[in-house]
Length: 139
Image (cartoon, rainbow, N blue to C red):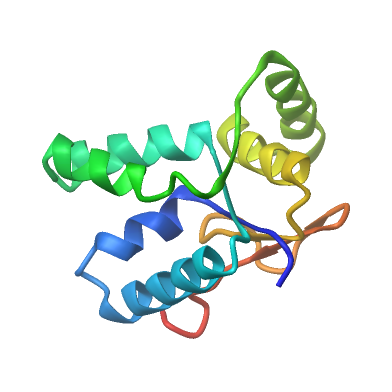
């Protein structure tokens, strides 16, 4: 499998028991891409994941830290000024939020061909990157 970038929402479902079907899909995707060393994240995704899990889901910070540490073998795209500038251009040109544009730009920088996300239009393409909502059938 080629590289796949994971948006925060997919990783949240891995630990959110409120939707067992989505949790199963998310866990399977993460496990498959982790085993093949083909999963990609960004510093933004990791920060958002920490924030959502500790604040909204009220999971202990130490527990979330251990979860973040479990992604240490994954490729992580750093957020830098160039990425922010590219994302600002993409956000303006495509009518996206800066946060969504940051994820798209990070995914493109990594060379991923798939971006797993629930938040953007399934099937939409940005160059070689295709947005995939892995939960379409699980909803």
